[in-house]
Picture (cartoon, one colour):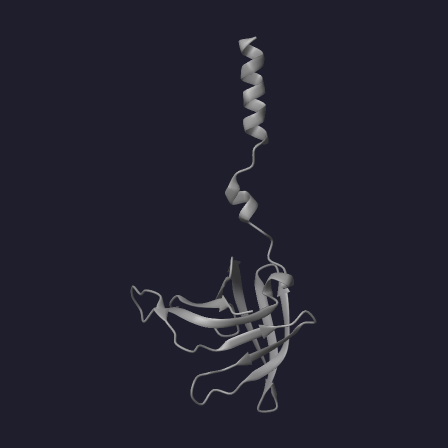
Length: 137
C-alpha cells in the first residue's frame, strides 16, 4: 500500500507543470501588435550602468499586416514607417530614409506589457545597450 501511495504521489508531482514554464509564451507577431513607448534605456558608457528613465520616448506602432510606424520624439530625428518581420526573437524593420532603404534588426523580448529591444545589426553596440518600451495600447 505504501509503495502504491509513493508511486501515486511521484506521478502526480511529475505531471505538475512549473508556473514559470506556463509563463514562457512563444514570441509571435500578435504579441507585438499595438503601440509601445520608450520608457528606459540601458546604455553602457564602457562600464557598469543602470536603467535610465526616458521622458516622452519614441513610439513604435506595429499593425497586424506587417507594417510599422516609429514616431520619434527626439530633436532632429525624423519619423519613419515601413515593414517588419518577426522571426523567433529577431525583429527586422525596413523603411526608407532620404530615398534610401534602411534596415534595422533587434533582439526582442516581451514580458507582460514590456518590450525590450537590443540592436542585432547592421548597427551594433560595442557595450551593452537595451531599450525598454511599455505597451500604451
